[in-house]
Image 1 (cartoon, one colour):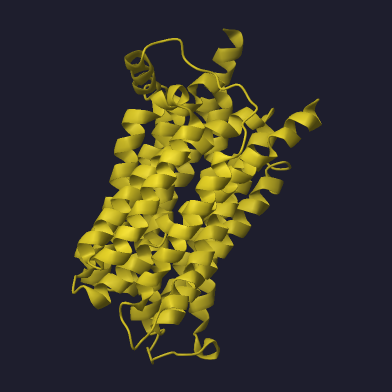
Image 2 (cartoon, one colour):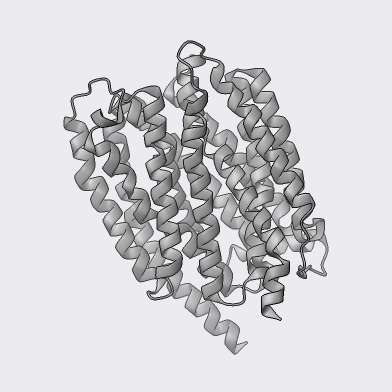
Length: 417
């Protein structure tokens, strides 16, 4: 019976993974588009960093108002709507070719991703039957997300042309095609699971999500997610610019080398999905974050001493260009494991509302992290900017242990009730 259930949902599971893959490319192209905007649209680093807000604030806003309603509207319908919106946005970016059209693109991506992510995270609980299965699937789907990000660092440079500064926009025709493919796959996939729906009104469902914020485990999850995404997005968004301005890599190399971060994030999440079966998630994440702090503390000083000379081939790239992005291997497991641990502790009917809160505060953390790093890049230089990350990483370690305590408290109280 279980094998049959797993098999008959293979199509919709594949659709979840592919939708996440496509949005990984779109969402995390913001670092590349920032670099292109600096070159083509005459904006400053601080002005360009606003693109992160145009992406993340709509994610937060939409998640806040629709997360509790999605089970009624339908997870599949939500994802189809998101894909349709972003298809139009890709075509608009291609024809618009301005910093204003980039803002519209990322605002639309933000709205669409809110619909996609709340749906995907809520549905994981429908396909898994234990905490271990939930951890593994969450880590796998987030790992696949990182592979999508890594592919963006090769797809975009493939369209770069030094003789034609507008040539890179052709990538959006390819992306529109991928979105259309994802839409069709999802449209013809069947979902053979029962989605628990609230019996209350839309207003009651919304208030239920608001009341979740009062739970101690939710407070510390929100804090942990906020701090983690501040670190991850701050580094990911500005790594291509760091490679170009500090290490003097060429346009194409600076973007391609940023793929090491995405690949190390993917590897870290796939490995974490296996290691969490043997080690408790708090101990595993504490060791990982201490190693991440070690990379920041001992690798970045080399960037301060680096005498930049233009680099146009892989053989000339300095060692720091390869080593620093490996921080992704150690920060990668944080997000899927804390999300899985928190969702697993809550009943399935609360997953959509909880996922809304996850998405909201992740988006806010990403916006703040990118904005701070952008300002530091402009005022203290790229080599020093990333030192800021030691502060949120340190706070994150403390928050994780408190989160674990409150998850245990909630589970004990829930079992007794």
